[in-house]
Image (tube, rainbow, N blue to C red):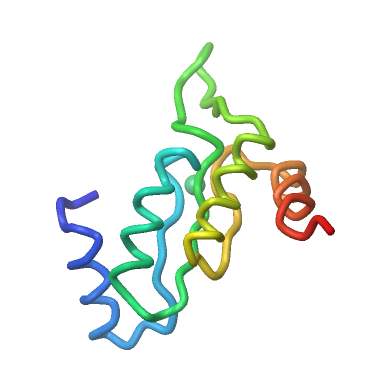
Length: 108
Ligand SMILES: [Zn+2]
């Protein structure tokens, strides 16, 4: 957000003794995939990612998010497969998003 690269941010957090690094909010899950991959490649620490359900936009004076739970879960699964250790949802996600994600990640 302030113009620092993910690698610079991760190294600064490591120097300060972070146990986990990651990103949340602002980006939808689709836009978060390359950032998650970049963070994963910058550190050996556990990585946590919690994207929004799309980029926020105003509609009739209310903030709305355009992703559906299936798309969100597909993207977050891609991040897990890229080595992200902990995942969740930020703005615009609901318990349904997490339920669909859980089903996708732990399907037998
Ligand atoms: Zn958020």
